[in-house]
Image (cartoon, rainbow over all chains, first blue to last red; front, side, top):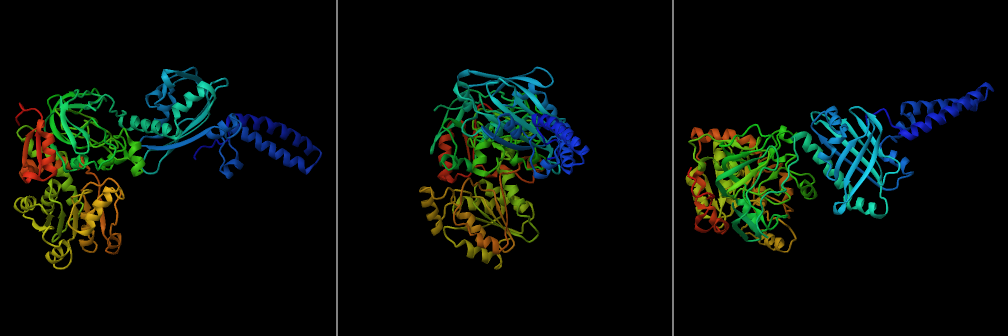
Length: 238
Length: 395
């Protein structure tokens, strides 16, 4: 991971606010020359730093990265509930070319099998329309929760969405002349009822397969300029 | 249009199907003037290749005239005369950039199927099962060619179809098999299988400087062709012990390189070949690698085993100990077509080789089903069948 951000959005706010409180409390204790006060102030300052920068040296040392979609979503879904998917593909293009294409969300339906349309609402928010079974449509709003140009985009569905989901895409330079490793993480909480069965229909028994195919199509589009199909070719009688 | 359609094991028929159309921007539609049946098509006829579906159009050795070009294809024009390679390649992925064209990342729409069996997908192929892309093939009057700005090679007027048609597969395939032998002066190359790929491997081995090529088969007409057309020495495995003869013919050393131009349906008269047949019938193994076993056993120490013959699944009782202890090198895979088409076209135009020497049968497409059986059953000394899809076209 080359990103310097490893703490997720909500957690960053909690860190910043909690850190500030802790630091203030510790500094007050310091005045009383309490050794515990010094430790509290230090910890509080570290938390504030973590909140302000999105970087936690302890998380980094532990290899924990809550800025990754899985953990953003885990925070959002309060736990590791739901379905977690992680897929990676290497594409012979530079990280910035791939990032630029992806960041233009309205282009995503060109390679995402089940996504009908994405409408950009503003810089951070977008509206998604997805194919469901029997021609039914599922819609939701999503927002960007983390973004580092040319490196990372993280998103989650907004409160009130039928599908509670979060994800991230990372663009990491690949060794040699191989291009870029594009790594997608996605977590979603399968809702119940009709929407739930629609989501289950989309992702099937193997949700990673859908993501893998979408990433494969992204690669084809970027490298070959088109996604080859055989749909509509001639065929003999059965 | 008319096309040859696969209906099941041992059941192919010529029938009317819809005409192909442009489906992707880089496509072209080719009106086919000549098309051939490949030895590897016989594996489809015999049901050895998985993921075939009833209704599939076969054929991957074809050429013709461009009649329609997709909007993103800047290379071809209507009226161009082209030979189409059997592999489909994007030209832009890691593998295409390394000239490993048959390993293209982006040309198999059913990549996931190949990944299940092979770990990673290889390039899409025309008319060769859904695992290999499910593309309609070229034993038809017209074909849609994807990534047609990368694969097809333009052919100048004045060179007859029959001299260039085999640039679509078997000539480059035989040539790559010989090139993989890393031939040095004085080398002896043994070639198992004197079908069309074997014939081109033999000729190519001589072109690349082999001292001696030994052709191994049990069909007299094929051994005769190898001897007469290329000057190969021959071993009829029906009458002679292959290992002993090879040892004797190489002064006790063994051949420097061995080419298995047979592949997964090898037959023979040794005990292991009957066992293979029984195991394949009982689904205990999928391929019958009798020729490959002999090649490994007979190869000299430190030699090369080059495999243009097609394998699809799992092999049993490969003498890997012999391969390891003798320090053999294995070279194999589908042909990296675009490396070879242009230089081999130049050889044809210079008169260094006339690939039409392998043709034994010329028939209209209408008789393709019959031709499959003639070829498979090696009737009528059949070695290579060329089909004419449009009776009015003369080249």
